[in-house]
Image (tube, rainbow, N blue to C red):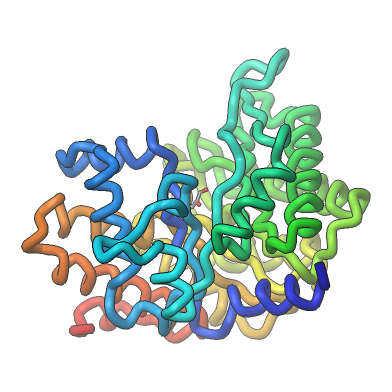
Amino acid sequence: MDNADLKATARSLVAKGKGILAADESTPTIKKRFDAIQVESTAANRQAYRELLFSAPGIEAFISGVILFDETLRQTAADGTPFTRVLADRGIIPGIKVDRGAKPMAGFPGEKITEGLDGLRERLEEYRQLGARFAKWRAVITIAHTLPSRANIEANAHALARYAALCQEAGLVPIVEPEVLMDGDHDLARCETATARTLQAVFDALFHQRVDLEGMLLKPNMVISGLDCPQQADVESVATRTVNLFGKVVPAAVPGIVFLSGGQSSLVATAHLNAMNAIGRQPWELSFSYGRALQEDTLKTWGGDTARVAEAQNVFLLRSKCNGAARYGEYNAAMENTAT
Ligand code: 13P
């Protein structure tokens, strides 16, 4: 595989004004999202919901790629067109979640290691044939009393690098996602330290394992207060601390940083991305790969009701548009009230 293709795909995924929709919830995770709106998690309902997202009019102006789950990659729209084709026909690049989930790490209570490397080469080959052009692997790092441990960070970094090398061999752009979780009452400084340690270990492993940094994207957390921290940092602090840290630990060869939302509300996630881009030009594109922050309002509006599909698609378009504006640092709260 020519790395030029990988680099071009990576750059397209972080094209100006656009970002990624993470719609790769595993079957247990989408069940949780559907439970919250009292919709049964059947294959038919999952298909209907994903079709609502992927066919929303106008989103291709703001959405460069969509991360799918295995089941969705194999599903079709109601008219029989494969979802990968529905997306590709709109100029939206299909991607695939390839990890097999974060499992408790033996010997390290409270910490998790992501599984899924065995047989990955063969799975990647099939995913490429099915139309995927990029992939995602998520590692989770937990902040608690004495955590994260060095062993946990290093084990996860090693797996991320092995995954990334296999993706590039298969002609898929790896999205490397080390997520330092927001759970806990820790402050911004602790998140910053844990994120710095994690990213240093991840880039060390990527370098050792000969991953081409120009043909990958980083999907990290922001430097942000723990969800239960009594002193929540303001938007400006999150933006400056995040950009400053990344300037020290993320090589300029990486074409883009696509943030996860990780439990931030839709509006806060957009405001943070906007504030980071308002700081000015950086070595990498600063973009989004949001799951919950792009979908929460859409899910609520839909509520499983076919009569509300168009309204829900409008809500999704508005969130995509607001985040698209945040890519330029041009988002403002008044946009929330504009008709799409
Ligand atoms: P959130 O934006 O909901 O954190 O999801 C992004 C994602 O893909 C997590 O792996």
